[in-house]
Image (cartoon, rainbow, N blue to C red; front, side, top):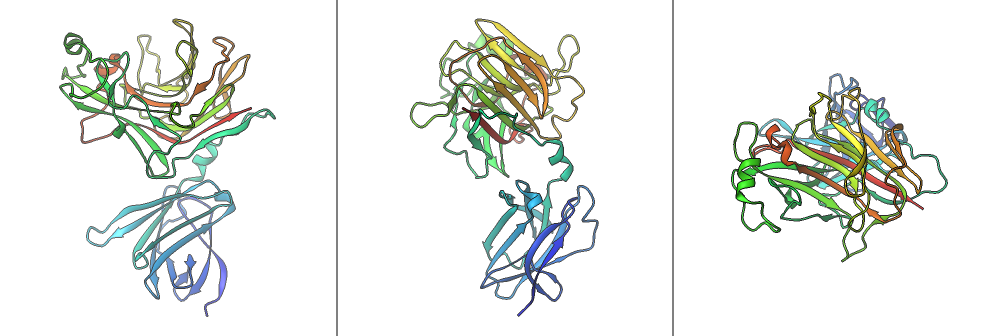
Length: 393
């Protein structure tokens, strides 16, 4: 019988990942079951360098199931991605992305995988440190909502908002459920060019032909209609999630492409009350005063009043990294944060009505001239959401 001991393997810039398994000739085993022994050998390369990955080959004594088990307490909550080599193209193809559990464990299994060659990639340690989020210190709030989009489809906590409907107040876009994708441990909400003419069968009042002709032209003057994405937690036919005061946080990465209007926000559960915008992104867009309005946060209240902050240009990584955006909402004030940094405090627009969670990525009429979205073959304008959390009393 092979001996059992703790071995280590360097993965994508991390110090080490502890692997417990059987040790056979040729290298450490990452896992073992009663019917299968899986052998992994680290190939030459700069596996410990930042941004690199570890390539490993696997073999099996019985060629049944492959079970890869990672365990390291320092990796709790981190993602590990697995790529398998396609023998015909000689390229690695994504197979699985797994978030480790609260004690740093992740498992990946499947029949007939033991003879494949694998590349294992983990997120950089530096990004996790930069994007850490600590709940504001309080004894009042308790976690009431959480979704890390770990499945392959949108869960029951959400509904499609305005499915196949012309978006209110917009001429050139309609909400389309296929613009919301879940996979790789995240939700992607996208905008996409549908075509040059308006589709039939879309619900809601269709914008007039004259307004469409004058408004819906992209940067090149091409008539353009766009599909947009919208989901929320409000509906009467199931257990909806609404909240009155608390904290909402979301870890998000936005697209740099101008023309989209992506947001994490809290509409009132009933018309006519304060709208709480945790964060809005317009891409790398400059306003008439040449200010880069990539990010804003604030509240809308009354018929037309608002308090809003434009996040300063010192933040340069909206499209290259995930950031955690949050609002702490009490009866007396709102506190907006990026990570632990406060970007806005206001007492305006205070409300005592329930609100619900909403994730959207629309195309605004004013932004069409910036060539919003993309041709149907690409989904370049996407808002990626890693997780959403809410705490209430």
